[in-house]
Amino acid sequence: MPFENYKFELKPLEYQYNALEPYIDEETMHFHHDKHLQTYVDNLNKALENYPEYQKWSLDELVKNYQRLPKELQTPIKNNGGGVYNHNLFFELLSPDSKIDMSNSLVKQIEKDFGSFENFKQQFKNKALSVFGSGYAWLVKNKHGKLEIVTTANQDTPLPLNLCPVLLLDVWEHAYYLKNQNRRNEYIDKWFNVINWHKAEEMYLKDCV
Ligand code: MN
Image (cartoon, rainbow, N blue to C red):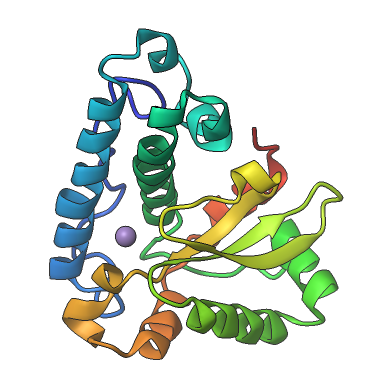
């Protein structure tokens, strides 16, 4: 299925829309996935429509190397390619079955780099709260294999900074406004209950583009 290459399609969720209740509600999941993500998919396809040479690039390549594209394509790809990349990853990193295996190699690395798992959670939450306007908080792996928490604005990704995504939290208001209104802190606390740690470890262990 064309989730990694043009012509892009909406990647289905791997769980039911109501599976993350009561932490993330069904209505939010429908809007977020079926409306917001669909719009990024459509606009990404539109941006590439007349550029057969760049239709061959994978989504990861487009997002990481958007600055190498023709000037007029850079912003549309950064925004809409980023929108598709970030949302696909965000939804994949959610799960109704969110148990943490403390022997998991990612958890071990988190404890090493942040002192303790609780410290990591607090630091991640503070970073996510610090995003002004729309954006994301990320747990990333740097080129030395060390974990860092960073934020990006809008639909930017950490890939052009040579940072590999491990975990991300969408803090655009559309991700939480229906249920939590302006209470981003409440949404962040709930999100910690639906993280797909199995997938996060997979991300941590693989090398990104
Ligand atoms: Mn979103």
